[in-house]
Length: 369
Image 1 (spheres, rainbow, N blue to C red):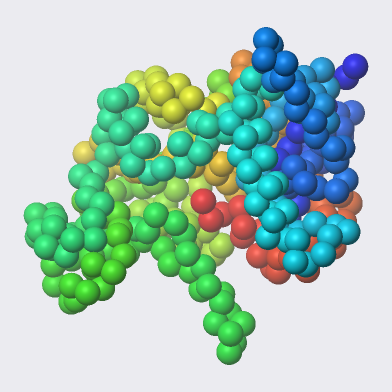
Image 2: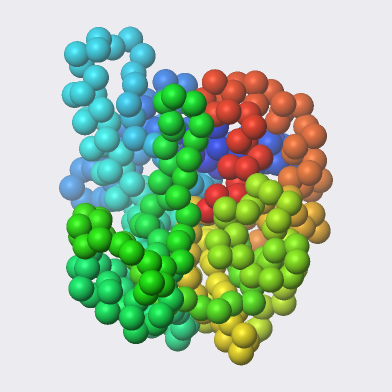
């Protein structure tokens, strides 16, 4: 029986759509789900007799499931053929089932997970990432995490200038205008007036300001590295390139990452037990490279959009198709992000998801993380 890859992410995720298209073009038909409660998938049965490990039927049938791209699965919130008063109970039951299944994931299937759920959830924690970078000998800016106003002020005084960033990227809509707003990193110096109550209200991440020359974005897809240098189109560094990613201000070029950093990043990936990740680094005026963070479910298509010679989509499709990290990039043929954007599949996908996401934001969505 032929095994089918499993894609677990939002149906309005352009990354999922592009990979689904790329696999289809090569005769591989993946299963694409948002949650385990999706009505279009088979019912799930888990069994264990007390002597052997758990087995599953349905999408996690060991003999039928290929590699699993555990990208951005969702928690169940709505159910067909159910009464509204049952919704809370159903959400709880399905959510508990999903937590159990994801915890057993590596025992249920003998296949490649991108990434294993337990590792993926752990690697989302920024402090865990910094701890791992420290173990692997990768330097990072002096860091403070606090809502103690006294400690924060001492930290700012020590460094004169620091970067503040939230744990998550917030976004909100102004009801009067319908405009969307978001919050990027901020530069803070000792002359800024911030009251103690505001500092105490919410914990934040404060890091030593690095006078950088550029940012590096390293996309690791299995055993393959793809690194680009990010600057403004004037050749100087950007405070936060994400806030410029949907404008013409940002410039992206291929960068040859020194071999010693490749070894360190490989160690980081192994330490975090992930096989895919998008790593943000910066280079200072002395050529020193600093680690900022890794996003194990990060966006990567914007890199290929700006550097078409980087076969990121092809690499991801090939790793999923082979189900191994030491894949050959040309396993999957005739696949690129540029071809995907021009495809009828993409146009049809936009038509399907336009009620969920403003179509104007579809291209910029791949720039945010």
